[in-house]
Length: 249
Image (cartoon, rainbow, N blue to C red; front, side):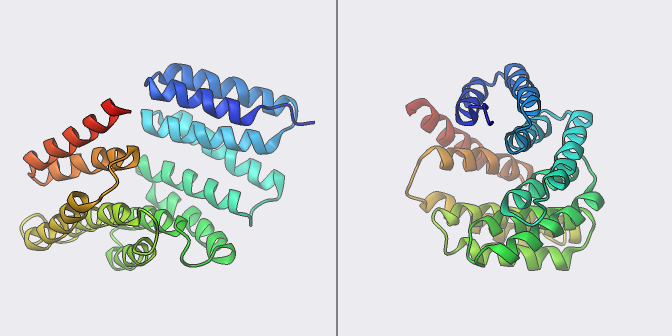
Protein backbone atom coordinates (compact mmCIF):
# COMPACT_ATOMS: atom_id res chain seq x y z
CA UNK A 1 0.00 0.00 0.00
CA UNK A 2 1.29 3.48 -0.88
CA UNK A 3 1.67 5.46 2.35
CA UNK A 4 3.83 8.24 0.93
CA UNK A 5 2.11 11.67 1.09
CA UNK A 6 3.79 12.77 -2.13
CA UNK A 7 2.16 16.17 -2.48
CA UNK A 8 2.89 17.12 1.12
CA UNK A 9 6.50 16.05 0.63
CA UNK A 10 6.80 18.28 -2.43
CA UNK A 11 5.09 21.20 -0.69
CA UNK A 12 7.54 20.98 2.21
CA UNK A 13 10.41 20.74 -0.26
CA UNK A 14 9.21 23.97 -1.88
CA UNK A 15 9.27 25.65 1.53
CA UNK A 16 12.89 24.65 2.09
CA UNK A 17 13.93 25.73 -1.40
CA UNK A 18 12.04 29.00 -1.07
CA UNK A 19 14.28 29.83 1.90
CA UNK A 20 17.39 28.57 0.07
CA UNK A 21 17.70 26.03 2.89
CA UNK A 22 19.37 23.37 0.76
CA UNK A 23 20.62 21.28 3.69
CA UNK A 24 17.06 20.82 4.95
CA UNK A 25 15.84 20.14 1.42
CA UNK A 26 18.41 17.38 0.99
CA UNK A 27 17.64 15.79 4.38
CA UNK A 28 13.92 15.98 3.62
CA UNK A 29 14.27 14.20 0.28
CA UNK A 30 16.65 11.56 1.62
CA UNK A 31 14.29 10.77 4.48
CA UNK A 32 11.32 10.27 2.19
CA UNK A 33 13.38 8.31 -0.32
CA UNK A 34 14.17 5.81 2.43
CA UNK A 35 10.48 5.70 3.41
CA UNK A 36 9.39 5.15 -0.19
CA UNK A 37 11.84 2.31 -0.61
CA UNK A 38 10.73 0.78 2.69
CA UNK A 39 7.12 0.47 1.47
CA UNK A 40 8.23 -0.45 -2.08
CA UNK A 41 6.66 2.70 -3.54
CA UNK A 42 8.87 2.87 -6.60
CA UNK A 43 7.03 5.73 -8.28
CA UNK A 44 7.52 7.99 -5.28
CA UNK A 45 11.13 6.86 -5.00
CA UNK A 46 11.71 7.79 -8.64
CA UNK A 47 10.13 11.20 -8.06
CA UNK A 48 12.40 11.89 -5.09
CA UNK A 49 15.47 10.72 -7.04
CA UNK A 50 14.57 13.21 -9.78
CA UNK A 51 14.33 16.00 -7.22
CA UNK A 52 17.63 15.01 -5.64
CA UNK A 53 19.34 14.95 -9.03
CA UNK A 54 18.24 18.53 -9.66
CA UNK A 55 19.26 19.65 -6.17
CA UNK A 56 22.72 18.10 -6.35
CA UNK A 57 23.24 19.54 -9.83
CA UNK A 58 22.34 23.00 -8.52
CA UNK A 59 24.72 22.61 -5.59
CA UNK A 60 27.55 21.25 -7.72
CA UNK A 61 27.71 17.96 -5.79
CA UNK A 62 28.96 15.82 -8.66
CA UNK A 63 29.50 12.51 -6.85
CA UNK A 64 26.09 12.63 -5.18
CA UNK A 65 24.38 13.72 -8.40
CA UNK A 66 25.91 10.92 -10.46
CA UNK A 67 25.02 8.36 -7.81
CA UNK A 68 21.39 9.50 -7.83
CA UNK A 69 21.31 9.40 -11.64
CA UNK A 70 22.54 5.82 -11.62
CA UNK A 71 19.86 4.86 -9.09
CA UNK A 72 17.13 6.57 -11.11
CA UNK A 73 18.11 4.84 -14.35
CA UNK A 74 18.28 1.46 -12.59
CA UNK A 75 14.85 2.05 -11.05
CA UNK A 76 13.31 2.78 -14.45
CA UNK A 77 14.53 -0.64 -15.57
CA UNK A 78 13.20 -2.32 -12.45
CA UNK A 79 9.79 -0.73 -13.00
CA UNK A 80 9.71 -1.63 -16.69
CA UNK A 81 8.64 1.88 -17.66
CA UNK A 82 11.36 2.67 -20.18
CA UNK A 83 8.83 3.85 -22.73
CA UNK A 84 6.48 6.08 -20.73
CA UNK A 85 6.43 9.84 -20.21
CA UNK A 86 7.75 9.63 -16.66
CA UNK A 87 10.81 7.81 -17.91
CA UNK A 88 11.28 10.46 -20.60
CA UNK A 89 11.31 13.21 -17.99
CA UNK A 90 13.76 11.26 -15.84
CA UNK A 91 16.02 10.69 -18.84
CA UNK A 92 16.16 14.45 -19.43
CA UNK A 93 16.97 15.14 -15.78
CA UNK A 94 19.70 12.50 -15.75
CA UNK A 95 21.21 13.66 -19.03
CA UNK A 96 21.20 17.26 -17.79
CA UNK A 97 23.22 16.16 -14.76
CA UNK A 98 25.83 14.50 -16.97
CA UNK A 99 26.00 17.60 -19.17
CA UNK A 100 26.34 19.91 -16.15
CA UNK A 101 29.41 18.01 -14.96
CA UNK A 102 31.18 18.03 -18.31
CA UNK A 103 30.04 14.60 -19.47
CA UNK A 104 28.17 15.54 -22.64
CA UNK A 105 29.25 12.29 -24.28
CA UNK A 106 27.31 10.36 -21.64
CA UNK A 107 24.42 12.82 -21.68
CA UNK A 108 23.66 12.57 -25.39
CA UNK A 109 22.56 8.90 -25.54
CA UNK A 110 20.21 9.52 -22.62
CA UNK A 111 18.77 12.60 -24.32
CA UNK A 112 18.20 10.37 -27.35
CA UNK A 113 16.21 7.97 -25.17
CA UNK A 114 14.07 10.87 -23.95
CA UNK A 115 13.59 12.06 -27.51
CA UNK A 116 12.42 8.61 -28.57
CA UNK A 117 9.87 8.46 -25.74
CA UNK A 118 8.55 11.97 -26.34
CA UNK A 119 8.32 11.66 -30.12
CA UNK A 120 6.47 8.38 -29.71
CA UNK A 121 3.97 9.56 -27.09
CA UNK A 122 3.55 13.34 -27.37
CA UNK A 123 2.13 15.56 -30.11
CA UNK A 124 4.93 17.47 -31.87
CA UNK A 125 3.59 20.79 -30.54
CA UNK A 126 3.91 19.74 -26.87
CA UNK A 127 5.82 22.36 -24.88
CA UNK A 128 8.05 19.71 -23.33
CA UNK A 129 9.87 19.35 -26.63
CA UNK A 130 11.21 22.88 -26.22
CA UNK A 131 13.11 21.94 -23.08
CA UNK A 132 14.29 18.64 -24.53
CA UNK A 133 15.63 20.16 -27.74
CA UNK A 134 17.30 23.05 -25.92
CA UNK A 135 19.08 20.85 -23.38
CA UNK A 136 20.08 18.29 -25.97
CA UNK A 137 21.50 21.06 -28.18
CA UNK A 138 23.62 22.32 -25.28
CA UNK A 139 25.24 18.89 -25.05
CA UNK A 140 25.86 18.87 -28.80
CA UNK A 141 27.57 22.26 -28.55
CA UNK A 142 29.89 20.85 -25.87
CA UNK A 143 30.76 18.09 -28.35
CA UNK A 144 31.30 20.70 -31.09
CA UNK A 145 28.49 19.22 -33.20
CA UNK A 146 27.21 22.68 -34.02
CA UNK A 147 25.10 21.90 -37.09
CA UNK A 148 23.03 19.35 -35.18
CA UNK A 149 22.71 21.77 -32.26
CA UNK A 150 21.33 24.57 -34.47
CA UNK A 151 18.78 22.16 -35.98
CA UNK A 152 17.51 21.37 -32.49
CA UNK A 153 17.45 25.04 -31.49
CA UNK A 154 15.30 25.73 -34.56
CA UNK A 155 12.98 22.89 -33.53
CA UNK A 156 12.74 24.32 -30.01
CA UNK A 157 11.82 27.76 -31.36
CA UNK A 158 9.18 26.27 -33.66
CA UNK A 159 7.56 24.51 -30.69
CA UNK A 160 7.76 27.43 -28.27
CA UNK A 161 6.48 30.00 -30.76
CA UNK A 162 3.05 28.36 -30.38
CA UNK A 163 3.11 27.59 -26.65
CA UNK A 164 1.78 29.64 -23.71
CA UNK A 165 4.62 31.82 -22.36
CA UNK A 166 6.72 30.23 -25.08
CA UNK A 167 8.24 33.56 -26.01
CA UNK A 168 10.37 33.51 -22.86
CA UNK A 169 11.73 30.10 -23.82
CA UNK A 170 12.49 31.48 -27.28
CA UNK A 171 14.50 34.26 -25.64
CA UNK A 172 16.52 31.66 -23.74
CA UNK A 173 17.06 29.74 -26.97
CA UNK A 174 18.35 32.87 -28.70
CA UNK A 175 20.90 33.30 -25.92
CA UNK A 176 21.89 29.64 -26.26
CA UNK A 177 22.44 30.17 -29.99
CA UNK A 178 24.55 33.26 -29.28
CA UNK A 179 26.76 31.22 -26.96
CA UNK A 180 27.02 28.42 -29.53
CA UNK A 181 28.05 30.87 -32.24
CA UNK A 182 30.83 32.22 -30.05
CA UNK A 183 32.01 28.68 -29.28
CA UNK A 184 31.97 27.77 -32.97
CA UNK A 185 33.41 30.93 -34.53
CA UNK A 186 35.36 32.62 -31.76
CA UNK A 187 34.63 35.92 -30.04
CA UNK A 188 35.75 38.18 -32.90
CA UNK A 189 34.20 36.41 -35.89
CA UNK A 190 30.93 35.77 -34.07
CA UNK A 191 30.49 39.30 -32.70
CA UNK A 192 27.91 40.58 -35.20
CA UNK A 193 25.69 37.50 -35.17
CA UNK A 194 25.95 37.16 -31.39
CA UNK A 195 24.69 40.72 -30.96
CA UNK A 196 21.81 40.01 -33.35
CA UNK A 197 20.63 37.14 -31.16
CA UNK A 198 21.13 39.15 -27.97
CA UNK A 199 18.97 41.94 -29.38
CA UNK A 200 16.27 39.43 -30.35
CA UNK A 201 16.23 38.16 -26.77
CA UNK A 202 16.06 41.71 -25.40
CA UNK A 203 13.06 42.49 -27.60
CA UNK A 204 11.20 39.50 -26.17
CA UNK A 205 12.14 40.18 -22.55
CA UNK A 206 11.15 43.85 -22.81
CA UNK A 207 7.82 43.20 -24.54
CA UNK A 208 6.61 40.25 -22.45
CA UNK A 209 3.44 41.34 -20.65
CA UNK A 210 3.03 38.89 -17.75
CA UNK A 211 5.54 39.99 -15.12
CA UNK A 212 5.09 36.98 -12.83
CA UNK A 213 7.36 34.60 -10.95
CA UNK A 214 8.28 32.73 -14.09
CA UNK A 215 9.28 35.95 -15.78
CA UNK A 216 11.49 36.75 -12.77
CA UNK A 217 13.09 33.31 -13.02
CA UNK A 218 13.85 33.83 -16.71
CA UNK A 219 15.28 37.30 -16.03
CA UNK A 220 17.65 35.82 -13.47
CA UNK A 221 18.61 33.00 -15.83
CA UNK A 222 19.32 35.37 -18.71
CA UNK A 223 21.07 38.12 -16.75
CA UNK A 224 24.43 36.39 -16.43
CA UNK A 225 24.53 35.63 -20.16
CA UNK A 226 24.12 39.32 -20.98
CA UNK A 227 26.82 40.11 -18.44
CA UNK A 228 29.15 37.61 -20.05
CA UNK A 229 28.75 39.35 -23.41
CA UNK A 230 29.36 42.77 -21.90
CA UNK A 231 25.77 43.99 -21.58
CA UNK A 232 26.34 44.96 -17.97
CA UNK A 233 23.58 47.56 -17.71
CA UNK A 234 21.01 45.13 -19.09
CA UNK A 235 22.27 42.43 -16.75
CA UNK A 236 21.64 44.82 -13.86
CA UNK A 237 18.21 45.75 -15.24
CA UNK A 238 17.12 42.11 -15.43
CA UNK A 239 18.24 41.60 -11.85
CA UNK A 240 16.20 44.64 -10.80
CA UNK A 241 13.08 43.31 -12.53
CA UNK A 242 13.42 39.93 -10.86
CA UNK A 243 13.95 41.48 -7.41
CA UNK A 244 10.87 43.70 -7.76
CA UNK A 245 8.69 40.71 -8.65
CA UNK A 246 9.99 38.62 -5.76
CA UNK A 247 9.48 41.51 -3.33
CA UNK A 248 5.82 41.81 -4.39
CA UNK A 249 5.11 38.12 -3.97
